[in-house]
Length: 194
Image 1 (tube, rainbow, N blue to C red):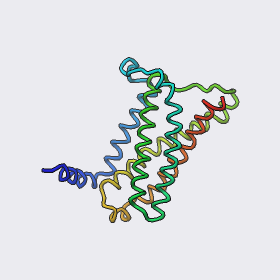
Image 2 (cartoon, helix red, strand yellow):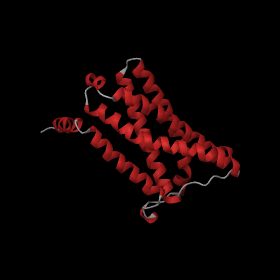
Image 3 (cartoon, one colour):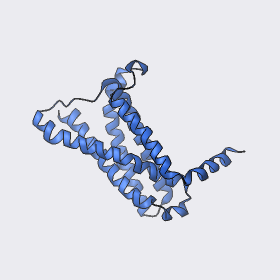
Image 4 (cartoon, rainbow, N blue to C red):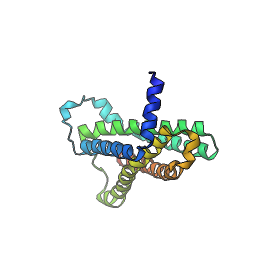
């Protein structure tokens, strides 16, 4: 049996289980995030690089800007009918998201959440509301992204119009863009303005 045959078998098995797989991947992903934020992983279990920890917020701001670009390009290309470029842009967006999340989890596991260094009024009326919407949208996006990506991975392109891929994809991409943009605002408030 070839690798291609095994991959095709997995694809066929998975296509009828997209909602269940979405649920499992969402639970695992959110458990990793909350485990890092709550510092469940022992700090000593992670390799520590002071330079990397210090660089993560700046690298993640760049990753977020790149992701805004790739999501926007993917949206443009699907509206233009270029499925191949759309697929490549959305795969790149997902890889950027994974890179962002891995770096964020590494840093927050070691350092915990970053404290706001600015004035209390800005913290209360600007920073926390912006952060809350950013985090909420990021959490809401996780199952939507898995669902859309699993549909794309388990169905031939010609079948996708008969699925919820486009409808859910529009919602996921919109929320994803807003979440990444608000993440850049949070970064600016933490590291540029204050």
